[in-house]
Amino acid sequence: MTVYRDRPDRVAALVQGDRVHRDLYLSEELFALERQHLFANTWLFLGHASQVPEPGDFVAQDIAGRPLLMVRQPDGAVRALYNRCAHKGAQLLTDESGNTGRFLRCPYHAWTYQLDGAPLGLPLKNGYEGTQLKACASGQGLSVVKHLKLYRDFVFVRLSDTGPSFEDYFGPVLGAIDDMVERSPEGRLSVGGGVLRNIIHCNWKIYLENINDTVHPMSTHESAIHAARALRDSHDPGAPKPMALEQILPFGSGHEFFDAMGARVFANGHSELGVNFSIHSNYAPLPEYEAALRTAHGPARAAEILQRAPQNAVFYPSLSVKGSPQAIRVIRPLAANRTLIEAWSLRAAGAPALLFERAMSYNRLVFSPMSVLAHDDVHLFESIQQGLRADGNEWVSLHRNHDAAETQQASVTTNGTNELLMRNQFRAWAQSMVAGMEAGP
Image 1 (cartoon, rainbow, N blue to C red):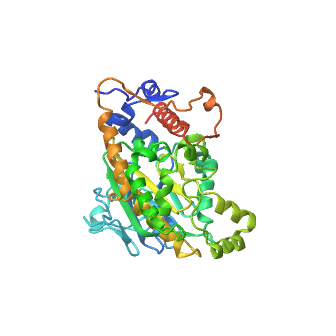
Image 2 (image 1 turned 60 degrees about the horizontal axis):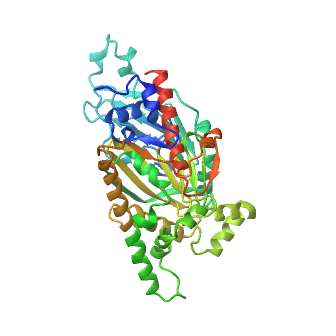
Image 3 (image 1 turned 30 degrees about the vertical axis):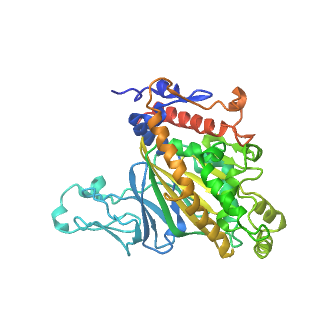
């Protein structure tokens, strides 16, 4: 039964000032509408330019249910193409990544295309003379993603012709990428160490909310924190802490710590958690590296970069960035109850190897499917997905620190335990969904 299609009023009613309806997590119909009206009309993270360093290098990725290729061009540009042969629709490349050479070739009937998607050749060419092939879409080559933006080598795409510009959509939250990139004395990052992937049987919004949830660590991760404290107590207090303890112990810092870290929300669902300090603020100093940053960026900018270590910066709805350690998470929704999470580590050019080791260590400790912390989270995410089906209360509470006046400004700075960060995401969800539905197909 169709409940929400062609009914933007019903969709808008699912998001109230201090709560949201459970259908946002459970409804397959809403998930289909999200692909059409939210994911297609907003800017989504596709990949990083360092993944395709040479001409012909490619990365295959599904974005909002559409198979895409990110391909390095002969002139050095990065383009995104739909991974669909113009002939019968076969995917041109099924490997996750690699190098396709000087052209793209369909494995089904050997139609070929230039790296920018332009048609190159096809077998039995004489058989098409006098036909309408060249005049129709199949003769024009591969479909190209027209709206692509490289921002400091982070590659974003907008699949629809409608929607905000890149700059208008992200606005000031782009500063979180600037801070991450400029932790490199050379101003350059590259993906390293592969990627950790985890398919979680929950709605993507459950995961994205949790990125901004500072109240759960003390209870959800109690056993891991207890184990880390026991290990700390067994070590010589004068000796340097092992990296794993340096990264896990702050999760048990207490509600007052997390509240005081502060947070900021921006238009379109974006946010920064930990604008004052965070669990990443007290890593051991590296004097030579800090001196290199001062030389590269000047004393004032270097101090700003080193002092700012937000816990998470959310580029709604697909990316979460940690400037220190230099790690990112990518949210890839697969179904109403299934989400792929990717955790990547980034290497800062000209920086000591320890920075990259911190990123790799943090991702393994916190985001790996087999880690002591992700184990706790995944269990609860999937428990929420099931629990929301229970009879009775159909609403999810977002009441903590709610203020009816909070919607009057595009950017608001607040305390770190305020559920405003989650409410901000859902308001952006409703705005995008309703705008897309009212605009029509």
